[in-house]
Image (cartoon, rainbow, N blue to C red; front, side, top):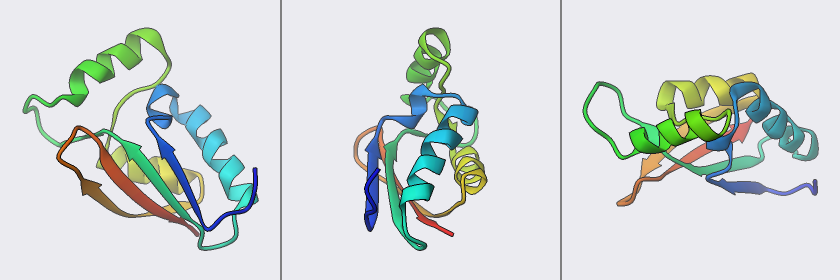
Length: 104
């Protein structure tokens, strides 16, 4: 993987279990310079039990892959495990959010 200032992945990690996501993120970490930015475009499951459009996708991920939709807390923990710090989550008008992080 080439060294870059910013790495962008859209709707990739939700299809993988946590251990596989960590391996994917660690491959970026090995190629990246300290402070490199990571932007994920993924669903973020909101807290509580209110209906959300991520729920049907989460069921699909459960049935068809090893992945899942994740909450903000789950994204923070996953990124931290792989050596990244979550900076912010930016919601959009659609179902996806921009999850911004940097390499520690």
